[in-house]
Length: 297
Image 1: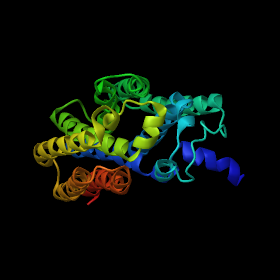
Image 2: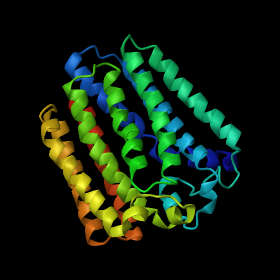
Image 3: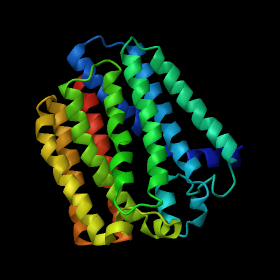
């Protein structure tokens, strides 16, 4: 039983599973603070949509790249992202058909739950879901052959829209939703650059045209810093629509991003990227957790 569970734990990155409903719920609670109408049932739906919807995207990611992932030569990156350090589609421990069926099932859970939301909120969320899965697939395929980082610029819109979808569970496309998107999109691109630096050996083996492959490690570090600074600039107007606890989380998270970015600029190395990558994930947790706590308190 334990041996059969491990591949699915790696496929779903289960040790990070708490983060996705937290981030999605931060958008939801930000909308509730603006529009009212909180209910535990609605929060439960938001948690289910956020968790199952994001997990579906992770499985889709592995399914699209299942053949290229067999070329991996460095296990360190997988050990960070996956609790048992394996790529179960690449090593054959999970058949591709079963993984695709799991991705579809998870997406259906998220989509059907979204359709139980009052109109037009369910329509907003489903539309973002459809776009995001398409953007993720485009990102995985387009970065195999490109001369400019089109895959990254388009592909990371899916992650940036994730908390916005949470906002639209109870809110509407308004200035606050736009600010959350504008705040989170440069974070997603900065994080992507750090993530690629930390996995450069495997990306070269796969033939992926990631940021450090396109621009070198120093160029990738400058990418990380540039989008971190843009992220910091947009944090100012975004902070204006947050409460005091959420602002504190924003400041603490932003400090993590800037420290990690400065560290990569000083030493743009793969091992350094892997050591500093958790600061980006801590920042995301502080951003989302601050918004959730601000509403709860």
